[in-house]
Amino acid sequence: MTGQATLDRVVATHPAAAPTLQVDDLSVVFHGAAGQVIAIDRMTLTVQPGEFVAIVGPSGCGKSTLLRVASGLAPAHSGNIRVNGAVVDGPPPGVGFMFQRDTLLPWATVRQNIAVGCELSGLAPSKHAARIDELIDLVHLQGFHHHYPAALSGGMRQRVSLARLLAYEPDVYLMDEPFGALDYQTKIVMGRELLRIWEAHRKSIVFVTHDIEEAVALADRVVVMSPRPGRIVAEHVIDLPRPRDPRTLRGDVRFGAYCRDIWAALAIDER
Ligand SMILES: Nc1ncnc2c1ncn2[C@@H]1O[C@H](COP(=O)(O)OP(=O)(O)OP(=O)(O)O)[C@@H](O)[C@H]1O
Ligand SMILES: [Mg+2]
Image 1 (tube, rainbow, N blue to C red):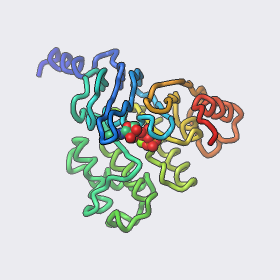
Image 2 (image 1 turned 180 degrees about the vertical axis):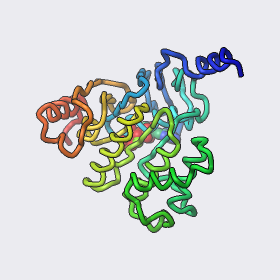
Image 3 (image 1 turned 180 degrees about the horizontal axis):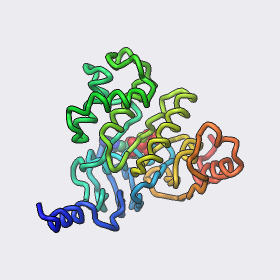
Image 4 (image 1 turned 30 degrees about the vertical axis):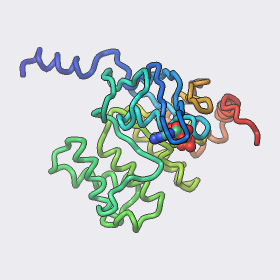
């Protein structure tokens, strides 16, 4: 390939100004037994390359639906989502997902599950073993290489899922309450690990959570959604210095102020 042809291809696949994720006037409607449900109502959101965006909102407001449309697993009713400039109409390349419930292959060991990520990344097979070792160390699962998911705790399974996602090395990480099922300490440790990795590689992350403190500790920007039909009702830029350590941030005065503001924006009625 000539130098010019290579350049043309690079420009075509990475338009200079394209945001990593562009949600444009998106509406999502489901037709179920109970009739029509508007899950998302004319939502617009931009995630820039390298940005860490957290999304919070009441249960049922369309957070998972948004990630499902972005990952090509559910269709838009109107509007669209672009990933790296291309409209999503099926699973887009370069997008990795992590769901609240792990989606590990039950018949595969920890190593084999992480190997799936290596295969998707296009890493040379000769380099898989070393990369898997590195990731197992990173998520602190030394000694569990040959265990099957059924023999791991929920937190350990989520760490394998994270290692598999990291092995894939996507351009954008779509994470749907990835640490929601973990105990408090493991959740904080996983958040710290995720930040460490993100700070080193600066890939875009969209991170859905119900935990306002987790959102503020991790993200550059926290987007608040309304109750269904989901719309964006507030956005808070989190101007806390990096690198951050989620273990110590909780005592910070500004951290507390951001959490209070976001809680107020959520405007969840007291029941
Ligand atoms: N496949 C589907 N068919 C019909 N309705 C659906 C479907 N998926 C989601 N919904 C509806 O869309 C709305 C948004 O659901 P979604 O799962 O996106 O909410 P969420 O914000 O992720 O909630 P939670 O915080 O509880 O995970 C809900 O009312 C839900 O019942
Ligand atoms: Mg959800």
